[in-house]
Image (cartoon, rainbow, N blue to C red; front, side):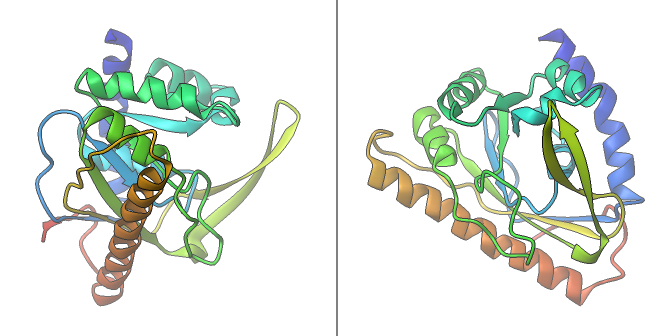
Length: 232
């Protein structure tokens, strides 16, 4: 749609400028992104990850995001106009179907396989199966993404959305490292639950490895130039 393209081209430079200066983003890509539809799958330490990952992809992408964020004034309107996909509790199938449609049209999807914010101790949740179902149903490659940041700079903010209390983790400044891995491709029956589970676990394993790589890079070079992009 014209509106989502306009929103992307209007907002992307703003987020990129913020991410490259105040946020001090450092990005490493193990391979060039393949052309066509792709699924970017990342760990999820903060509420702000979807916007930063989307900016670093540097291609228009549609994000699977918790439906509650669509209810937040201003932010929700931005998400709707940008064409992002709400994920409602108990209605994950509808979100997956909408994402497969986007992929079939040659567009990119960003998903956070943990399905919730990562544990506060810096660990990881087991992946839910949505990322595997997307890959198997569409044939699109999965690009795993590992994020690492300074956990001490996360701000937890309490908010009430439609009478429901939510806690978001906002990361507004500090080092933010991302590592994009090699494309992963999966084939098989999307109705085979064991196969789907194994594919989801394989994606999450790569995400964890890349997150550790991002952490090691941050520890080795705490003074890395803001916004630098490296190729492995």
